[in-house]
Image (cartoon, rainbow, N blue to C red; front, side, top):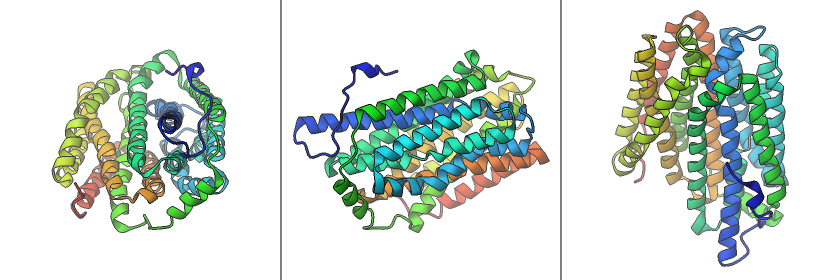
Length: 401
């Protein structure tokens, strides 16, 4: 993907250098952090579509415990995003990011050799405990000037979304060659490469600059009702996505093997990526409430069609569902970041990301529990969440254009 040998080996601690070199160095630091966080997401997401079927076949596997195995990563991410961000303000962004990568590597290798669902749950929790997305946002916010900050953070968000989408396209293809245990090891090697890259090619941010950035974060609270309402839309969106990924391999049993799931996922995600610019443009130019309501209705239609449980209905339903989920996951952060003060962007995105990951946990854990009572109950739960999302959208003030 990247030729590490051709990249420079140092970056500045802060944007004190003037002129062209400053811009070049900050662009490089943005690349290092963005690709590292992107590969972190990629390494986790390529496994998600197959994890429920894999966990069910481990010793002690059950629908409820499988749901926890799938979702516990999101819970530890949600709980630790903000504390990790606060810790990074005290001891340095680089140290915390490296520690988070080590925890992820340990979790991936533990999962690769887990023989019981209990060990898999522990491994997934360990993977999620390296909660460094907020650290990345804060690191870049601290070194970027006011004129560059919006563009840099937008680039970071776009790269994270791209890596996530790539994982869902390439994951089923990788699974043709590697089983799930081998995919965990493969992911660990990716993160080892990221660890070495961050260790050798970045420098600690000047402590005075870190303190200044932390003080800026105290100017205005992001824990306000409007911000939390918008972030809850991402909670619902991630919940529905993880509910779907819990259901998919179980619904395909007897129809397709897990290493054939690319037949369902790849076209759906490519179509979702293709229509994303259209929905994003509509949300920017018109009332985003209407666009977001339509997208939640697409997700509802997707679950409804999938419920018929034929290969054709699952393919069609997956296309509808992915169109809605992917567009919401891009549009809502765009709307949220319009409202966040530049001095609060790191913390504001930390709140948003925490609520997203909490939705991932709920989607997998609750769906797993309800699946044990019957698939119809799990589908009904998804429908209730969609309805709640639509209600929440239409109780929000119109976002700024």
